Structure formats: structure tokens, C-alpha cells
Image (cartoon, rainbow, N blue to C red; front, side, top):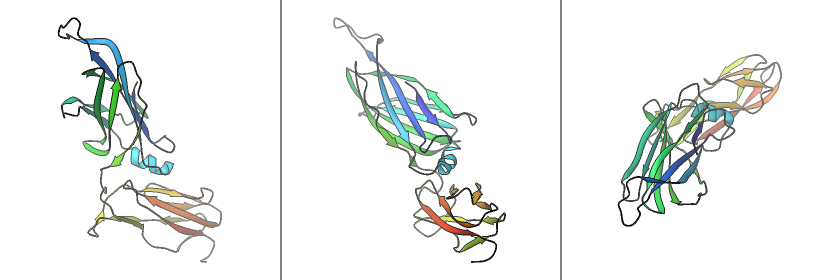
Length: 238
């Protein structure tokens, strides 16, 4: 069973399944085990980004370049620590690893870090209990953000009462702040409530179509904070 990490094409959550094949060491007639038996036990976890828009998933998951998998036991002994490349032009990462079991039932702690370069921007961890001859259920583990702006406590779009003429553009801006009130650099995902009225690019520039009406502009950051404002698309000021 593979580790399956999916990029920005997922709707609406990016998921990954961490699957480990546990080889049970066997001993016969009191002899010491010299190698793993043929019986294997799968260990599986599923990861999910916090719920959000497809635009947000594209921004928050688009920069993943690698996946680190660390497996340990309750006594803190490490079983595995491996980093797998995640090529920029790939949408799915499939991995398989083998880990030894100490008995017919074994407890393992699994940590998965999604990397952007050398930085771990998302991580998840959980416990997996495996038994010989059985296939455990697959719990879903949330991915926690640990990248730039992880400590944001407030976030807002700058300004209110926006107006733009049909076919015009409007530059939007949003800022996140830490607990001391200092601004933070963090990815921002922009989206619009009605694509018939306009579109917005990754930099926050809204382009109105040749229609009139009111549209909501939304912004969110991976720390989980969001804000939205109304923009009037009209031939003259309201």
C-alpha cells in the first residue's frame, strides 16, 4: 500500500496515505530469528489539509518538493527516517517502505512532514497499531501548518467599499499579524464568489468582466484565518 501525496489538483482536500509493510520476525524451536518471515502487515494513515477552497489548496499544497517519513516505537527507538523527493511536475507521490515488527502486535508512531525545499511547512503524526493477519482501519490525520506565518493571530484584507468598472482591475492586499501586532509574510490564497463577474490572480489582482453586480473577494492563509470583502462592479460609483 503506497504513500500517496497529491498536489493542488485535489478537491477539496489534499490527501496522502502512508502505508508501511511490517515484516514479522519469526523464531522456531527456540532459535534466534535470522530474518523476517514472509507474513506482512500493512500500516496505513490518511492525511488531509484543513477544509477550504480549491484555490487555497492550490496555493498551500503547490510548493511541496518532498515528504519525510519518520517511524518510531513507544520506547522512542527509531525504525525509519527517510525523505522522498516530490518532483515539481508530479501530482501524485507513491511510496512503499518495509519496517520490522517486534511481535504479533506492534505499536508504531508515524510522522510525515511535507517539505518545501528544506523547510517542513506541513506535518502530521499519529499512532498505528498493527497485528499479524489483520488490516487496520485508516484514520484521517489533519495536516498542521508550520511554515511562514504559522503564528498568525489576525488576518484581514486592507480596506472596504471597493468599486471597479466592468473590464477594469483592482489590486487587493491582505496582511497577517502575530500576537505582538507585527506583520507576517505568509502565503495568501485569493478567490471570488462569482466567476461570471470576475477573476483574481495569485497576487490579489481582481479583473472584472463585462458585467455588473456585486462579488465577494475572499482571502485565506494556511494558519486557518480568512477574510472577505464586497466589490461592486458598476459603470459608476454606487
